[in-house]
Length: 172
Image (cartoon, rainbow, N blue to C red; front, top):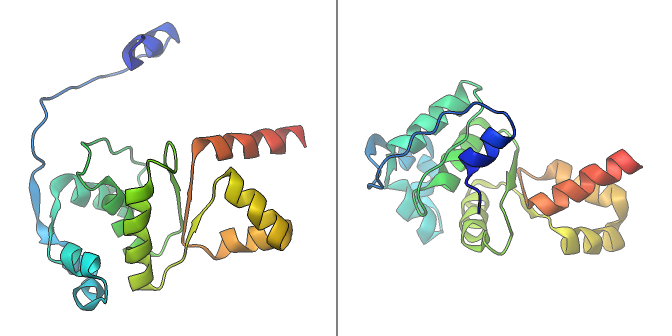
């Protein structure tokens, strides 16, 4: 099996790869409550628990980069708060988000957390995969589906749906 670096070389791309030993992420001096004080008094235990946690340094750096308008690719270990890093920016700035997970089955834990976080903030999450899209099209038509997407603060989907939508646009 080819590794990413080998594939990039075969495609003629230059790249820089830095690998370090796995280690526990460093903490920031700031907590989630510094940005989202409403979580301290939420009905959700998960939100209250998150509020008192200090951010990892990579979460704060991601938040700062996104706030400056930079593009960002955040790669860190499982359970290191990647979802919370972009969520924090969305919650504070009010930008809308398209969250793409490899498969929605893998995103179940993230979806559960996102739903609770967004409910506490009065934000709307729409989970959209091929079967949900078909169901929504039958129930509300393309205009209703489009409106659902437009009013959502976070749309969670997978690469397969996006690819099919792009193909449909190109072919249509």
